Image (cartoon, rainbow, N blue to C red):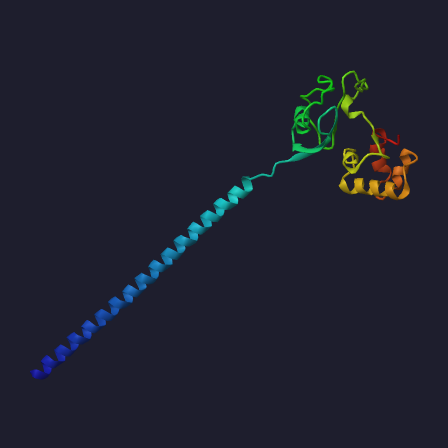
Length: 205
């Protein structure tokens, strides 16, 4: 009888031990699942934040600009960078406004400016060339003297950027003044096609 009771007691202890061991494993498993859930949520949140940052980058567009040469009867002649779609009045304001002797009605201040355009404001009483049949503004008809123009003024010519303007100035420094307009083709990088675009906009005197 004592042996039976002893065996029953042993079985009870063994059963309790197994039950406790199973509970511990279950707790560990639950804890592991919780960590996985937290990690997964953190990953999702990070992905959403990254997506938001990417969205901001996509919608942040770089504004376009144009470069114009404002000269004539203005307070500060020079090359100015304006927003695309700017009008002649914006170029005038960038140059400090009219000078005291300016003809304030000769140029249409509502004209939309183009990249590389020369915007010329005449003085009072100055006679400007009449507008051509093609509708070119009189302020764009003033010729650029390739023997005296600096790099900034040369850059207002079609097809002439900073590099070619510097090459023209350097050529002129080494070889002297251009005897005729065609001599401009002696400058490296200026061939027949570019010269044809420039011919009606340049002079040597």
